[in-house]
Image 1 (cartoon, rainbow over the protein chains, first blue to last red):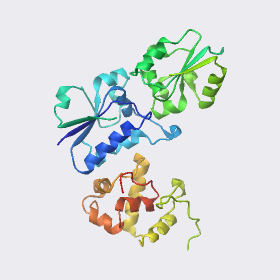
Image 2 (image 1 turned 120 degrees about the vertical axis):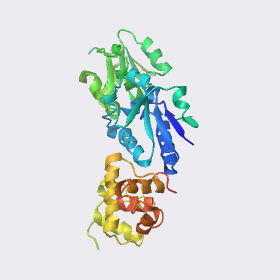
Image 3 (image 1 turned 90 degrees about the vertical axis):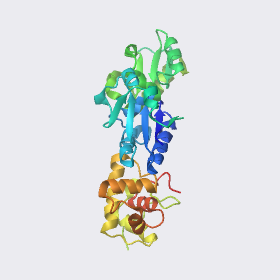
Image 4 (image 1 turned 180 degrees about the horizontal axis):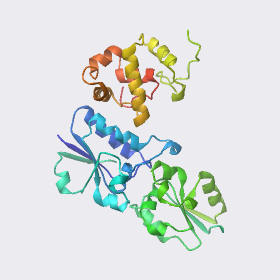
Length: 116
Length: 93
Length: 108
């Protein structure tokens, strides 16, 4: 079973996205193939240069970098949303693939779930 | 800066319906302060670059957005308190 | 004994303030679990502390702890039997407690 977890909420303002990341890591822990897709305001998770010390949270940028180590197969970003939020490929974390959100993409997964 | 008539504090991201509502409500003597997810607007709108638009420093830093807005528009928590205290009205969106 | 004061800890024995960690503190916490720290322990403790510095998280569960160790050191050390022998109980929890890191979120 391949799972796609979609995060469309911006980082730091709420916990839903972190819970979704946790879910992805839990699937990976049991060797279930899982990928994360960021779309809408969710693409802001992927911007380089985050420093969350003063909002008293852990850096999402750093937490996400651990996902491939734990076995999350791919970090995907929706191209349209990246444009909207001024994110060029060079602004994104390493290992992020830009893709187009649509049926062609979701069709490749047995299970698709949204964060929150 | 002359005191603001209304300070609009916006913590919703640009794809939230209240974001558009807020932008429509800003009058010529008003100021806009972006906080929390609201700071994502700095990547979104060209007209956010006005001298009456500000964004909260810690929220910009968390999201890696400080370089995207001029330093005169970046405010601290203390500045935010001053702005809220001197404005005639405050609307928290 | 040690001349370093024992830092404040929570009800599960994890440090309240990460900066108060010290190798001597690790030895005391390990001793509570009946563990005498060897080079093999220190290798994993050093790995975990580096991991935390880079990713700002403790491996959230035992399985992910094993995965991360396997990525870094290979199958020989990245297996649950080896890590269980070094850090009895729930290895991720025991190891993070000794290494002065936050409690893994998904360990019971």
